[in-house]
Structure formats: C-alpha cells, structure tokens
Amino acid sequence: MKIQPSPSLRIRQTGLLRFARRHTSTAFAAVTFVVVAFSLLTAGLFAFSHNPRKQASDYGFTAHEWGTFTSIAGNDGQMVKWQPQTGSTDLPQFVEHLEGTDFKGGLRGTVRMETPVLYFYSPRAMSVSVHVAFKNGLITEWYPRVTKATPRGDLRNVALNNERTRGEVWWKSVQVDPAAVPNFPVDDVQTHYYAARETSSTPLRVNEHSRTQNEKFLFYRGVADFHIPLSVTTNADGSLLLRNQGTAPILNMIVFERRGEKVGYQIAGPLQTETTLAPPEITRSVETLRSDLEDLLVDQGLFRDEAHAMVETWQDSWFQEGTRLFYVVPESFVNSILPLDIDPAPIQLTRVFVGRVEVVTPRTEQDIERALAQGDPAVTTRYGRFFWPIVQILMDKEPTHARQVQDSLAALQH
Image (cartoon, rainbow, N blue to C red):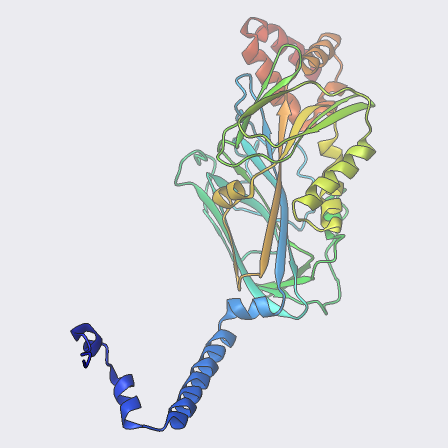
C-alpha cells in the first residue's frame, strides 16, 4: 500500500524542498548548506562586533559602586524629616553643586544619599556614558562635571515626597583609560573625600565645556524623601525592634553604640520580617568593627581596597557618639530608587549601599538631657549634625518638657 502525504505535510513542502529535488546530488546539497551556514555565521559575528554593549563585554569592562543612605528614626520607628545638608559639607571646593540648592539650611528630607562613588575597570581605553536618576530626590553634588543635571531653577519649595520629583544627572562621555597618568585635583579642605581614590580602579577623564577633569571615580550625592526598607523602634530597655518593610530580606545588620571612649556592636541578619536586638555590650573596639565591616562589604561583592576606602571615608561619622544601625540595603531596592544606566553596559555591575539609621535610645536621651541641664556645649559636637533633629524627637516625645528644653537650648547657644 502506498502511503500518501497528508495535506499539512504537502503544504510544508517549501522552496527549500523544491530546491533539494532539483539537485539530486547529496554532496552538492551538503556543500551548499555549509556555504549558507558560514555566510549566516559571518553576518552574525559582524553584527556582534558592531554592538557596543557586546564589545564592551569583550574588553572585560566592569563597574563597582558603593554609597550610603543616612536617616534618623523617630519615636514611631519611621524616618523623620530633617535638614541633612546642615553643618560642614566635608567636600572639596572643586566638587560641583546643583543650581538652586545653595540656600540656608538646605532641603528637608528623610534620606541623605552620601558619597556614592562609581568605579570602572577596563584593560583598555574606552568611552562610556552614565545616567543616574533619584526617585523622590535630588542629586545635589557631583564630580567630575556632568553634561546635564535636572531639575533646574529655584528649588526651595520643591516637594521631595512628590512621586514626580526625580533628580537626574548625565555624564555623556567618560574616558576610561588605564594608561592615564593620575593627576587628580586637591585643595586645602580637610576631608575624607580623597580616601575613595585608594583603589585599583581605572582612571577617568571628563571633557565638558572646554574643561578637562580627572578623577578615580564618578561621585555624586543627594537628598530624598522616601521610606527606607525597614523601621527601627527603641524599647524602654534600650533594645531595638526591627521590622522589614520591603520585599527582599535584609541580609546583614550591625547595631553600634559609643559612649565616650567605650564602644560596642553586634552583627545580625538576615531579617525576613522582624526581630528584637538587645543593646550591645560596650566591650568592643573600633578597630575590630572596621575589620568586620570590611569583610561584610567584601562578601557583598566589593573589592578589598574598595571596602577599605568606604570604611576609611566614613570612619569619623560612622563611629561617633550615640547609637546607630547599619544594614546592607537590598540591591533590588537600590536599583528601584536609584536607577543607573551605563552605556556600553559592563559585563558586571556591583552596587553595595549601606543604610545608616541614627537611633534615639534611653542612653542618648539621658546624655543630652544631662548636658542641657549642665549647659555643656560639647554635646553639640559629640552628636554633630544629628544633635538638632534628636532634640526635636525628644521634644515630640515629651511635649510637656518642650519649653524646658527650649530654654536650655537658648542658654546653651548664649
């Protein structure tokens, strides 16, 4: 019995089948197939070589970034609004600023985005463009000079909590050159800014508006008003109730406390939902904490010299008087609130941000109340830029004592 092909099979007899029927030589068909396949492969390789993102990956181009989100926890565990731009800027004079943000007191927000630095690593010279956006925030400082920064104009009344508020900066042409001779700017300002240069990253050069600026990284800062991925509530016994407010686990946390020359800390995590951490015993040292912090940052993907540079940059501020919580911000949260685009795309991008939350514990309350009662002006130095928002938190907690605190502050200022 002769089997007839089905109608669907006959329909699938395309030009390729008709071509094979006209050429009965199997060898000829095989040679033709090899030629066609080689042509297609050659065309694909040509397209691949002309795709800048793929080409950058061929060069082994990678990027690493670290930064800090700084906040202050209120009585309800949520972050309070404060003016994080008050006090010393601790930045060199050559750092540039967003127009319209040079007014007294600065912007009020819940988060100070501090010193993100973006390193590049490339075995050969190349050019990249970089775009950073900050949702519910403004990017207020940077170096080297950006091609464009938005928004512009008078920003005194900008609403950071408005969903449409979005600060952005662009570096259109950053020259990454491993053969460049380091020639980075310096000035007389005492700052830890320069510590971030102590890495093996590739030097950068930016040419904008007839000016050439050299640096080891791209630097920027900002202010925002958004909810961080956890809440921190202080209990009467000094313990901390931590609640994860995000969707991703918070992998690492450190509770740190300093009272005079005595320090203590404990490492915890991961945090899935909530946990309570007891006050750390004041029996540790800053040196061991520095080492543990560096190890933690390396575990998150930073190179050892990058982790050291980050801790060195923030050693004075991170380890000052008071109680604070450090935590590794989930990278998914960083990408959602601070989207970063690099073109051509690196073969690997690592972003490690540390969240820092100042916490008003009973010990902090007692210290400040005692200093105010004694008229001790050194208390403002011990707590630095956090002193005034902490005092406001104390007055909100005990409204009946607000007048007494205000009188003590007035006497302290005179």
